[in-house]
Image (cartoon, rainbow, N blue to C red; front, side, top):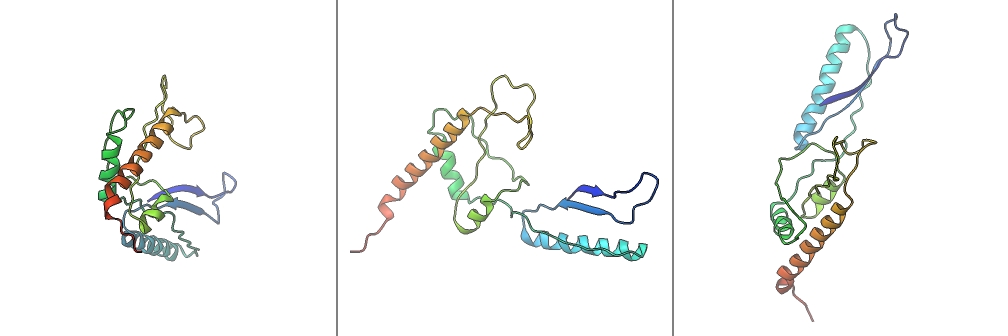
Length: 166
C-alpha cells in the first residue's frame, strides 16, 4: 500500500478542515486486496470517530496482478533461446506493476516478458514513464523476433493435435 498524495490545502498557519489522501494497493491475490480494502476503511472510520470528523471512502480496483501460466512461460523461454540476438534470459520474481495484459491472462493461457533495452552509452537509467527514459529501439525487433519464433514453434508443436471434421 502506498499513500502517494496527501493534500491539505490552506494557509501555512491554519489547520486545514479537509484532507484528501490518494494511493495505491497492489496485491497478487484478489482476496488479499479485498481484505486490505476493508481494513483501510476500518482504520479511517476509527480515526474519524476518535477525531469527531467525517470521511468519504472510495476504493477503485485497478489492474489485477499479471499471473503468467507455467507451460506458456517455458515455451517462450525455449523460443527465446533460438533467437541469436537474445543474449540473456532470466526468470524474475513477480512484480507489483500495473498492466492491462493481466486481463488477457485471466481468460487465455499465456505469459508476459520484459525486454532488456538499455541503450548504448546510457549512464543514468531512468524508469519507464520518466521524461528522460531512453531505450535501444533494436530491442523491439528482438522482442518481435522472439514472439514470432514462439508463435511458429507453437504452431509446429501443435499441428498434429488439430482435428478437422469433414
